[in-house]
Image (cartoon, rainbow, N blue to C red; front, side):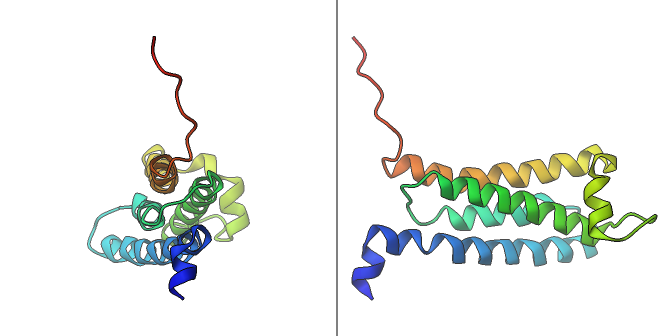
Length: 136
């Protein structure tokens, strides 16, 4: 077990379970804060990205996967919290997403940005970024 977790793929395989755990905690925390009167829609995607950013990774795809997952989770959480009165189905919500309040869209975008940035920052720290040329 130690050899697997010490290898590159062992640590990178921790990204998805940690992202799922962070997303779940953020999703539940969003609804708990909603009952307290706070609209923290950036929380699900943000915690997803923060949790996914713990292990080092050397593939930029993890950042994109987590960013898309954070966006999806933010949209889904908003639909569960505030479905449209005309039609409460998810398909209707997706096709009328442009009618959502601007502040809500900003919160979803903030969660998406953190969801992407967590794994992306670890990608850059692990040497995944190409070397810059030396200054003359």
